[in-house]
Length: 207
Image: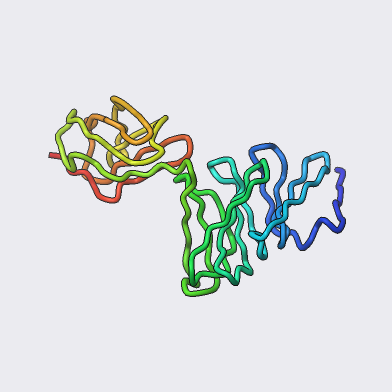
């Protein structure tokens, strides 16, 4: 077994580390975000959006998402693409987010340790997170046509009625048409894409 230690002034209290879609390792470096290849080549990204960057995770959208633990100005969550472009997201009254991870729904989830919402869980959608807005009609018989509208629905791999898979008739980014499957029972409708799974806010009734 061979071990290597990478040290130098470019490493400033690194904490979280995650594998990016580009095959490199990305790490939260307190006042910057670092990238290191498996060959040891390091790139450091700096900017005003890095305020105590702590944990980092790869999102379903291909970017890296990180928490800012010392965000006195309300800056909570940062996003950096593998090309180095970063964006920050703020919510007034919330400070001290820490652990962060990509959820099975295509969103990013994090814990909040300080501020007005201390002791809670945060969720932020990404550009690919599927979301269900409406279902029409809200009830129907087996083989009835149901229209599901929302966002990022294209390429759905499965639509299910309370766990029972349905036949997809048509599928676009904002609308899916399905038929109520045999054996379906009253409950939520879910839409699964490669990015994650969306669940309807209300249930669907079987008549």
